[in-house]
Amino acid sequence: MMASLMFRWRQFGAMTLLMIATAALAGCAAQSTPTNRYTLPEVESPPSSPTSSISGNRQLSVSPVEVASYLDQEGIVMQTSDIELNAANQNLWAEELGHQLTRQLRQSLSAELPGVTVVSSAQGGAGAQRLSLSVDQFQGRYDGRAVASGEWQLHDGNRLVMQRHFDVTRPLENDGYPALVRALGAVWKEVARQVAASVRAAPSAD
Image (cartoon, rainbow, N blue to C red):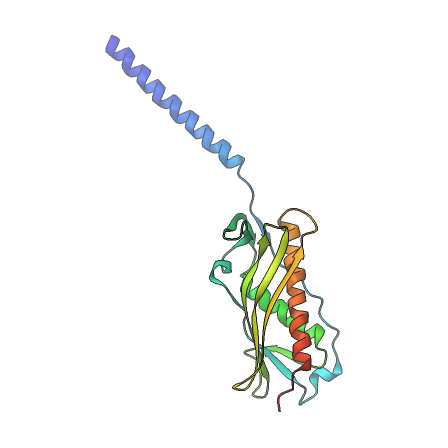
C-alpha cells in the first residue's frame, strides 16, 4: 500500500513539474519581443528630362555596392564601444543592405546629376564610366551618431579616373532604431552628394 502511494505521488509530482514548465514556456513565448524590419527612406526620383534620351548623353554605370562582411546580415549593426559591434536580433533589414545601398545610390546620383544617365552595371554601354563603391562602416555608434565610411572609384574603361575615401556621420534625432535608420538614410544621401560632386567635375568618357 505504501509503495503504491509513493508511486502515485511521484507520478503526480512529475506531471505537475511538466505542466509548470509548459506554462512557463508559453508565458515566455507570449512575452517575446516582436521582430521589426526596416528599409532605408526612399529617395525622390528626379523629374523625367528630354535630355536623358539623347544619344551620346554621358552615361554612368553603377556597380553593386560591396559591404563589409559584418554588415552583410539581417541585423542592424550597433557599435557599442571603440572595439565592440553588435547585430540586433529583433531589429532587422527588410532587404539585403547591399541591394538597398546600390538602389538608393543610383537614385540619388540620378537626382544630383541631371545631365548624366545613371544605369546599373548590367545596363552600361561600352562608353560608360564605371563607379564602384565599398562600405566599411554603416551602423549606429555609441556616441549617438550614424556613420558611413568606405571608398569609391571612378573608371573610364581600364583607366582609373578618380578614387576617394568617404566618412560621413550624423547625430540621431531621437532614441531607437527608427531614428537610427532615418539617420543612416540621411548619411547615405550625403555620401551620394559627395560622389556626385566629384563625378560632375571629372572628365567625361570619350
